[in-house]
Image (tube, rainbow, N blue to C red):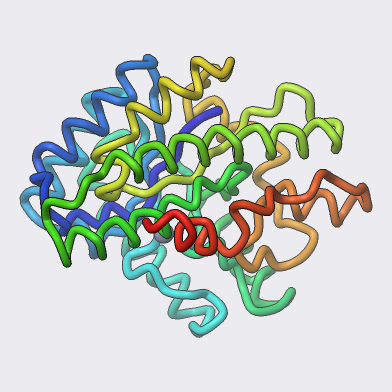
Length: 276
Ligand SMILES: [Zn+2]
C-alpha cells in the first residue's frame, strides 16, 4: 500500500506540539522507508509553519498534491466556483517545485450527479490533474476527533487505548479491503490508504505502519501507486464518499466481503462501548 495524507490541518496542539507532530509523521514514513503523498488544502497551510512542513515533505522525497484551496463539498458548490478553487490551490502549490499532477476530491465528493461529475473530471483534464481515489480508508479523522475531544476535556488523558484501537482498526480494515480487491480480481493492487495530517497520526502513525509491516504488508511509493492507470478515469457513477473498490464492485456486479461490523458508523459504537 501507499499512504496518502490529506488536509494538513495543523492547529491542534494539546499534548503534542506542531513540531513534534510534524517530525513524528515523517519519522513514521522513514521507519518503513516509505515515500507518501500529501494532499494539501492550501488555505489550511498558508502560513510560515505550513510552508516549512511542505518543504520538509518534499525534501524527504514525499509527494505534494492538490486537495482544493478551501475543502468544499462539490455537491454543494457551483461547478465553476469549485474548479476555480482547484485552480487557486494549483497556483499556491506552484510555490513548491516538484508538486505532482494528482488531485483528490475533499470528502471523496466528486459531484452531486453525473452531469456535475463529468464537468469536474473535464476540468481536471484541463488542469492536467489526475484523480487519486482511495482503496483503504483508515477512518482516522473520526478516531482523531474523539481523541481530540478527550484531550480537550482532560489534557492528561491516557492515550494508549486510542493507539491500540487505531492500530488494530488499520490492520483489520487494510486486510478487509485487500480481500475485496482480490474478490474483484485486482491481485497485487497498489492500495491507496487515506489518512489525515492529524494529532492521532502525530502520536501513532509509526505504531500503525510497523504493525502493518509485521502483518505482512509492504509499502509502495505513493507516486508509483497513484500511477496505476485504472485509478484515473471518471468512475462509473458519482463517488459520494465511497471507496474506489466499492464503486468497482457495483460496476462489475460482483459480491464482495461485507465491511467489518465492528467499524460500521466510523467505529462510533465500538468506541462508545470501550469508553474512548
Ligand atoms: Zn480532505
